Image (cartoon, rainbow, N blue to C red; front, side):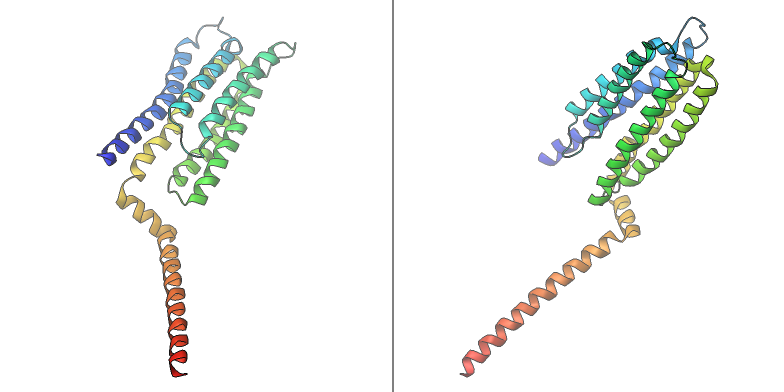
Length: 229
């Protein structure tokens, strides 16, 4: 019964991650639909959007807390900081590249956050390391492309921001979906064989057995010596 409960909880936790990144995708499509309005200034609504992403990220983190995993917590604070960054930047007269600067800082912060998570997964020898690394690299390339576009094409900021949120959400969805696949025992065994993790574990066990046998032999020799006396 306990195993069934744990599996059900794991599924619910993955659903929460999927829902979070679906919000990014839906927001992106909404921005694309309203990008044709000339009066719609992306700088005015960008800050509330990042605050919204920060709120949902923190909510999912506290509902889906994992031991020594603070990626979503930091991600929530990154969104809140970027929303505050835009609000503060708007008070200055020269705000021509505010959106590009915000996305630049946002991309760098997310890559650092995910990079640290990749490092922790590598230490644990977790096979979820591979999808996370792939997503991190793709998000880095996406950020570079979007930032360069925003610096040169400010007039279509809503359109670029819409596509950015859609692609960001789709790429981030790969992580929870791949985690479902990684729970398959056959897939995990194949990946571990490729990484030779299983071989190293076997070698460690063999060494431990050899040490134990050596200790037993030394004890036996001491006993035999005593009996001879």
